[in-house]
Amino acid sequence: MKYRKLGHTDIDVSVICLGSMTWGQQNTAEQAFEQMDYALSQGVNFFDTAELYAIPPKAETYGRTEEIIGAWLKARAKREQIVLASKIAGPGEEWIPHIRNGRTRFNRTDISAAVYASLQRLTGNTVDAVVQSIVDGVLAGHNPRKIARAIQGAFGRGLTDALRNTRTVQIWSYRDSARANYTATGGIVQGWVWYARLDGLTCMSCVSQHGSIHELSETLDDHDNGRCAPLPYIPEFGNPVQQRGQDWFSGLPQAEQKKQMGASKWQAWQDDKFQFDQLSHQRPDDRYGTMRSEASLKQLVGEQ
Image 1 (cartoon, rainbow, N blue to C red):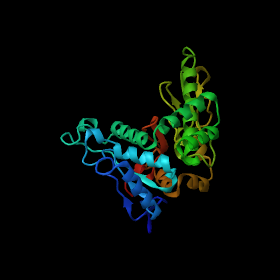
Image 2: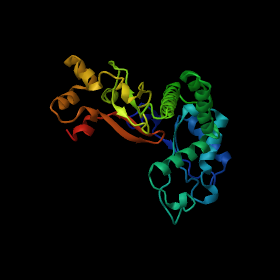
Image 3: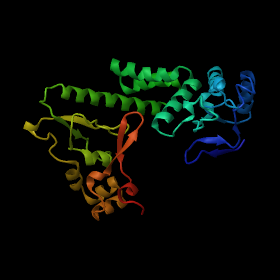
């Protein structure tokens, strides 16, 4: 069997992909199991499915193919050996009215609903188990690595992904707890100040936000694995951050500035093509509402 890289990833997939649209209607579950077993034995590691399968689409067979694949994955315990692709159904009021009334839109709400439903069919109850593992771990005060291992056991995910997700959830919960405590002070604390640990590992989004003052209604929407924290802002005492991020950065040697910001971006900043605070780019995020990351040169100044 020959293999190719999947897009721009490091994932190797077989040049032959196993389709599945007949499973659950034209083929039985037993026949589907036989096909998957044979394909894997021949080196085919790329399986394709879709939420609307089996074909032709009917309300009574909607999602049935994914359920069969989920049952095979559970029975064979070979999830790590295959790459599985699924697809959201598009709009189609006349031919798939049973899927979101045939009015699917490729927006956050419909895509999230489709992905979650597909994962439930493909993994059984393990989606809920992952969520519950995070909630239980945070409430129990477990460290991120312990929670990540619980997720790995429930879902079979890689430890790196599990750690990233767990740390981010835990850090966000701590930040929101701090913000809730500030709000409960009866007006003594009137906001919060973005605090970043300034060093050579700090992204430019966090550097630009360091020392900025925010309303209590705002969330500190740092990126995954972000190290930033909200400090209480009491007007009578002033800003607890004595040196803003831009001032700290400007005090670094020019070589260090270029290394941390990137030479091309640094030159554009020197040429006044963007303001320092624009380095923090806020984007929509399905999990947390919004999340910040360092703006790219294209986002800052357009095509180059």
